[in-house]
Amino acid sequence: MTNIYKSTENLLKTSLHSWHNVHGGKMINFGGWEMPLHYETGILKEHLVTRRYGGLFDVSHMGRFHIKGNDKTAYLQYVLSSNVASLQPWKAQYTLIPNNNGGLLDDAYLFRPGDEYFLVVNASNREKDWNHLREQAGRYDVSLEDQTSNISMIAFQGPCTEDILAGLLEGGSMPENCRNSLSEIILAGTKMVAARTGYTGEPLGFELFIPSEKAEEVWNYLCQVGSDKGIVPVGLGARDTLRLEAGMPLFGHEFGVDQEGREIPAFAFPLTSVAVKFSPSKGDFIGRQALNDQSEEVLKLNAGENLSSEILPRRIFPLALTDNGIARQGDPVFLKGSKVGVVTSGTMVPYWKFDGEEDNIRITDEHHRRAIALAYIDSHILSDQKLEVEVRGRRINSQVVQCHGRPGNPTYFCAITVKN
Image 1 (cartoon, helix red, strand yellow):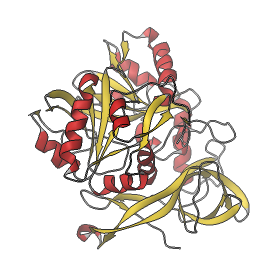
Image 2 (cartoon, rainbow, N blue to C red; image 1 turned 90 degrees about the horizontal axis):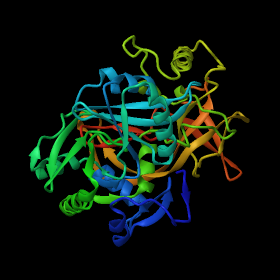
Image 3 (cartoon, rainbow, N blue to C red; image 1 turned 120 degrees about the vertical axis):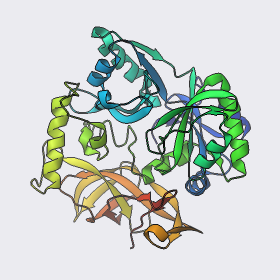
């Protein structure tokens, strides 16, 4: 994880800061905010509990910008990569904030509760994103408001979360049963927006947008009721291991600049294809031509037409380590003695073992650990390719895989392991 320092002086604090301190949160500096890395349960257990039952995450450090005005849709069409015109009320979409070179200022999530929009951005990029978005707003009839301090954000992720949330509902209705749906609900006497979104890869999960003065009351309520179902509070450490296992990018690792200080093209990461649209209704937007060139290059690479690419010389792929060792960001990757890339994220993660197959799969009480990574490697390398990662001067075996896990049945995330 980036932006972690020992000092916690003069840091921003969420509305749940006191709760974290009282309840054993190990506090760190993350993106200028004092946030819990983990609680007394520890990162490994918080990861496992989220996958088996559910976890409660304070993600209020992320930036939240409200966009209003007559030109709000046209403005967002220009500054974001997604087709905002296709976003229906009470829906959300993953999007990017591109630059003219086809690189990224940030990745983000756009929400549309009713007829308004709000954009959630990474904490470490909040000031940079805000300045860029304000600068681009000059020729549009729009107003931007930074609501980060006024609206808190809680993630509630895992197999038990839907039943718990539905059982506590005092008004409103649950979001439709599909990803990226929104609704307005009342919980603990508080009206809020609930979204079927999240950063863990869980098949079931929600993000709640709550008036900051009510956030601790709602958090306590979910903790108290959820504890009987196995729910625990989860810090940024397990949030990072969960997103890595789910194959999701983190700015400063998979997006931004590489180890040599060169900008990482947006389409180097596979999820970018979900967030970039080139339909006629989208129109022109920042970085369109560069992103279109990258998109076409991906098609050629996937079809095996190119063995090398100037536009996308490297892409990011999941790596499973098949020898003992833990890869970390910056570790070099080799193919037959030649360096072909570098690890962008890597760690050891725990996982639950499942029995059975497909519709008959079931979770067991047995869990293990495995070393996984994401790596920025030469574009011609294919899935299943055997590679080596240099870890502390020792080269260990690894393999390119399609993914580290996916929903194995309607409620559980199922790890996909590689045999030695």
